[in-house]
Image (cartoon, one colour):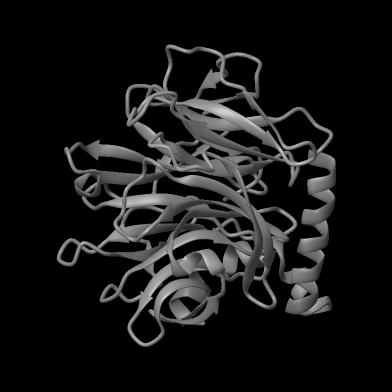
Length: 343
């Protein structure tokens, strides 16, 4: 690993995980964290479901189906929260400069406590920074996507809790497109990439020296005929949920939501099962995320063709049932995210 990245993470690493590396080794640390994640998933299945979500531009936190929840941000347009595995923090992006074209927005990657405390920004709002999440390796390292303004593609960035704009580190080369979706306990990132040698596809990416990571192709039959998007790995790392778009011309209405089996060792996504909008009607079904361990998937859905306003829906894996869990039909709910379950 590049020395800059190592130094960037070393203090947090020593604080949270060095004892495990020195006594058990890194592979044992990953196994220990994965065991903890499996236990967490089992416990989460029996707890009330709490989530963070966008409601009319604010970020809210609340128990699913129990009312509007508590707004922890106000006065801005804040998008796409992700909840850290530990330390009870949310990472999101704040729109600083609007534009008719979403990819021309200027945004700031921001972190806030789930109680609304300790808001701080990791980027300065002069760039297009989207869809942040956290590593699951015990470090809670912020990861996000940044636009290359000259090419229109994206590359992957890394920050740190308590960091300041200008301290972020570039993880992938900005000459080709890479977009991070989700992360694994062993430190790898699940990405979409137009790799200059390996081609377009989904990969598990291992951070490397500077902007030279290692990419390993993830196989999925659906990927031959369309796009897997906003993929989220379950806490036990045995399943994924994702949006699927037929064809490769990017549109977000008309997508089908799936769950599937995920094999991180063999890098495969199999046994795909549609859970919403199976026939691809032109509604906005989006942002599926695991909640309550691996028991359920929460997502947003519009009730009119080509509509922007959405409600929150909950799909239960055990009985294949779907329930609307947002409570105000006049509000716009989007980007739900389960408690302590980074995407």
